[in-house]
Structure formats: C-alpha cells, structure tokens
Length: 205
Image (cartoon, rainbow, N blue to C red):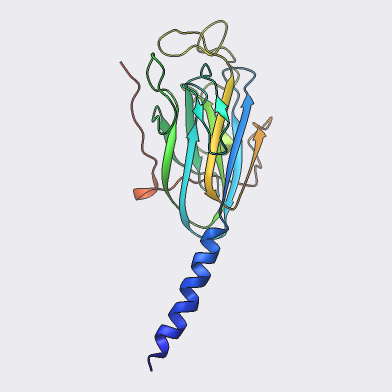
C-alpha cells in the first residue's frame, strides 16, 4: 500500500477547507476631498488568489448584489508590503465595473497573494504614492488638485467623492480613513502578481 497517498489526501482536504474559508467584502463610502486616501486592512491565513475592484467611477453591481451608481472619482490603487514598502499600483483597469461614455477610470486587480496581513490604498488618480506607506501620497495637503471644486477627471468632467470597492478571496478586510500621519502605521499592504507587481494601464488620451 502506498502510504504517501494516505498522507496526501487529508493534506489536500485541509488545503481545500482552508481555501473555502476565504471571504468576500464590499465597501462603499465618500472621500472628503481630492487628497484624501481610503485604506483597507486585509489578511489571508493561506496564500491564494484575490481580487480588488473599484466601481465608483463607472458604476456596476458589486459582489454582494448592490447596484453602484456611476459618478464617482477616477480611482487609483496602491499596494505596500508589510514593512510599508510600495509594491505596485493600478490605474484605469476597468474589470467588472461599467465604463461610462468618458471611458474606463475604475481600478481592478486579480492575482496571487502570500499569506499575511496587508493594506490596500484607494486614492484619486493623480494622487499616487511618494514611496513607502509612511511617506504618504503626492498630493497630501492639496485638497482640490484636480480642479477648484474637486473630483474632476482627466476629461475635465465634474465627478464626486463616492467610492465602492470589492475585496475578494481574503479572510478579513476592514476599511479606515487615511490616518493623520502615516508614521507608525503597524499594518502594510501587498498586491502581489507576477514579479510582485500589479498590472497597470495608462489613461485614455
């Protein structure tokens, strides 16, 4: 009798059971101005495939069946490692969101994440990372950098601060507004794909 098969079967069952515990989370909210960031803390007990999707710009139906109205800001995802090191960004990858007549300006990533605790940052496009999480974002202190009223897209269309984000395939996820300072933030964020980088597309001309 091949005892290695007996060992392999419960191991596979254990891995399958662990994978089935992964959860799916949907969040909505509103940024107060162009320079604000929304942070999401997430964790995985086991490595696996995760998906991050924004719906605020073009609208759509989120994972839990809620209809998201279009009209929100051009969104931007940034990922950081546990020590705060920036790992990647995603801008204007529509995913399951609905493109508006102005084009796709939502963000989307699906790929492999190692087990661990992470943070996903959502900002207005153009407010990208300076470097590490503790260094913040390029438009910190510039609350209406897109236009005088705030939340204008690259087509000069007036949008609003509404956002909606799905975080799928993780064990836990919570959302918190950007802290007053990034110094001493105890958690970090990772969005890992091939080469530990997110896919990124350029804005429409």
